[in-house]
Image (cartoon, rainbow, N blue to C red):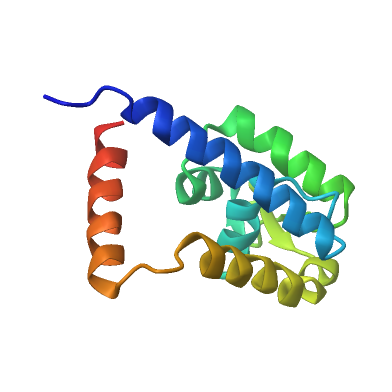
Length: 140
């Protein structure tokens, strides 16, 4: 099996992606947002609210890591905690108006990254890349 160097290549891509995302967030006036917040904001943008357990599953993070990220987003005014209407022991996480107003900027960051990162890729290549990355992710 020829896998030598693949882990290093994946690590390099991750580091460059993280760095570029930080740069783009800064360019659009969102410097306080970390790349690790992105998946949380995207997941919450699709629904009214989620419990911490639901959010952890949606973003594939453990609850302790997620708590730190959600706390920071709450401090920044992008999310809020709400009591569950059915069970007051449960806390739900929802986007704030500030996050909804920043949606356009987040979309612009995402579009810019997609244009740059996948320039020159054919649709078939993107489909194959997605298939292979999904397979790799399932092994983890």
